[in-house]
Amino acid sequence: MKDLKIKESGKILVVDDQPLNVELLEADLLSHGYEVVTAYDGKSALEKVANESPDLILLDVMMPGMDGFEVCRRLKIDQETLLIPIVMVTALSARDDRIRGIEVGVDDFLTKPYDKQELQARVKSLLRVKMFTDELEKAEAVIASLALGVEAKDSYTEEHCNRLSRYSVAMGKNLGLPPEQLRALRLGGILHDVGKIGIPDAILQKQGKLSVEEFGVMQQHPVIGFNICSPLRSLKHVLPIIRHHHERCDGSGYPDGLRGEDIPLTARILTIVDVYDALRTERPYKPAYDHAKAMEILSEETAKGWYDPNLLEKFTKLNLEDL
Image (cartoon, rainbow, N blue to C red):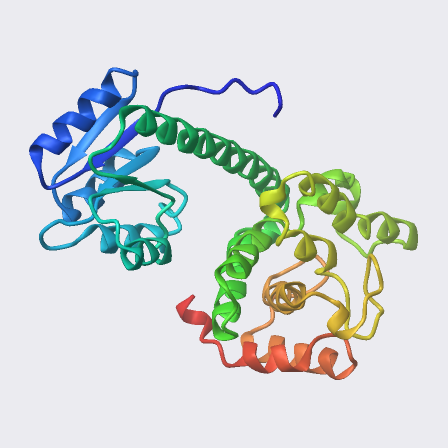
């Protein structure tokens, strides 16, 4: 990452209801080699974001209809656009307006009339941040592809990762977890078994019961997955899921033998949905159980102390058919 060359270019969306303001900003940005797209109101700005995927947005506040605050709010609550840096270019200098801008997710402010050098400095800085964010997303995508590649080797686990993501996020929302934990659950559903890439196919695809030695090898996959993903700071909330989704509340799980609430909440959530989905899926050693039978087995194993009973109760109330 240290040797990564910083690219001094990018696509910038300029949004202002005054054509002259747009023309001035566009001219300044084009003179420095940036690609510029424009919009003159909030609605068209959202359409341009969807169609053009800008790297940065220069956004006016005072516009008819949908103002800049609302445009920013909508972009920052959308998983697809929340990481696009937004600079509010405004004549407003009141403290309350700036606080409101921060509350809806504005990344920076530029006061009209703007200084050209200040404009270029802020644009250059935020585009660098966006570039590094994009690089992290690409790294996450590569790891996710590895995880889905592991899943694809086994016809019995088709779509398993996507189902776990949906079920886990639904559980997290039911529990009122914050956005970063919901993101961790979504990614955890996909990445939880990425460590199986380090397990021999002879063990992964064995039709019968694993021997003691083979199961010992299989038990290493959470640690392998943890080590693969730990260099990425963007996955820090996902790491507990990857490492601890095979722990049991009575301490009989692996790899660390954690007990009860020492097991991270997100890992306890994914454990339940992982076991449920495995029960509902045909495997070489068992048939696919129906929902009622799967819940019965989950309840029995929870009574043994394996899983969190409070989370199981929440899980039983989800309408999985709608997920």
